[in-house]
Amino acid sequence: MSLVALLSNPLSTGNKDLLPKVRDYVASHGNIFHVELHDVGEIPAALQMIARAKPAVLVINGGDGTVQATLTELYYGRPFGDNPPPVAVLPNGKTNLIANDLGANGDPFKAMDRILDIARGDVDRHVVTRPLIALSDGRRNKPVLGMFLGAAGLLNALMFCRNKIYPLGLPNAVSHVLATIAVLFGMVIGGQSRLSPFRAEPMRITVRGAGAIEGRFFVLLVTTLERLLLGVRSSASPGAGALSMTCIEPRRRSIWRAAIALLTGRFNELSAPGVHLRRGDEIRIEGRQPAVLMDGEIFQAAPGRPILLTPTAPQSFLSLAM
Image 1 (spheres, helix red, strand yellow):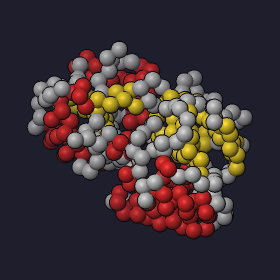
Image 2: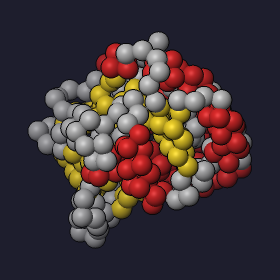
Image 3: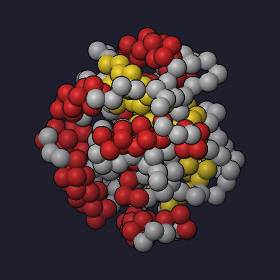
């Protein structure tokens, strides 16, 4: 059986109760090389250590910030040279978007069982590729990498969940229900009311080759994932490009048409005023000082600068789908 490397961040919320069980799991499986971090700043050194062990799969056990930092270091630091192992992500966060897209959902130990089972055979048969989003905000020397970002009213709603719902310590399922109620409230009153958790500052969004749209937006999301929450797939929007964008204006009719299309599984076929589905290889977000939430981390453009999104070359991931 091939070696599987497991990178754990004990500071991630999901690991506060889970990590002792992870250690027991590792102790009962001799082919797992487990590295625990004390801080995300140790990720470069940890990956250098893991690279020397030459694992067949690299598993990330941490929250969205840990996944983002690891993917960024893998891309820029190149600790594995030209032959990085495929990456698997345990479902151990709040939303688990990346893990779910790769077929890992529910119990993280069942996901580990599946990873070990794959490692017994031909790993290449289970490898899929996804580009990453490279985000430039005018503040850093090199772009930050991720796979999902929300902005406009969606950013405000996500921050409402982070600041008001998640601190309650409720199970993820309950937290998601409360978040859904907040979303429904925003849908009922629209995204322009001052009472709406979705009210956002005006911005201009330009998809190269597909034009620009301006105004306040109820939802703006950009992703390279194929599957999002509730089984929803990222938009099969018109145009070529690795970045999939969904933008919904704060008009009640537009919001409700989008919601009905989501519930009936026809969102990718939706053509309605105020709903913009696009694909492209460059997306520019401009405003007074635009901000986005990417894989759990907030990024705000430098004054007078846009947020620029471009795709990276495809990266290898391990799909746990049966």
